[in-house]
Image (cartoon, rainbow, N blue to C red; front, side, top):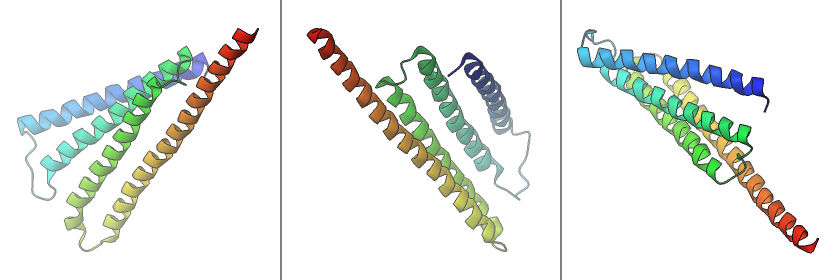
Length: 163
């Protein structure tokens, strides 16, 4: 991974992480201060809490991506230490799907006239779970690469002893 790519990715991560922290702070302030009274059309307090949690799942994934990029730059990504971050990303994606399903459940009573919206929202939740499965497959590929790397190191050590 080139230096320009790493810098660009890190710049994007910093901007997005800063923005999400700002949004979380504003939503938390709205929850604590009670300045935005609910008019009854939507359950705003549960939606705010769910939004704060959903943003938190994205933040966990971004921090883990940052750590993995650091490992790539150091050449240590093909190690067992990388699994901790990949597992955290998978967990964050699954948590995001669960948060989305909670939003779908909160929104469903208001969609009695048009239940298709709820079905579409459920489909989006399944798509989010699909992303988690894709990352799980990539984790399996990482496991194979780590195993091959360990095997190659052992073979190199044996070859060095013979020579």
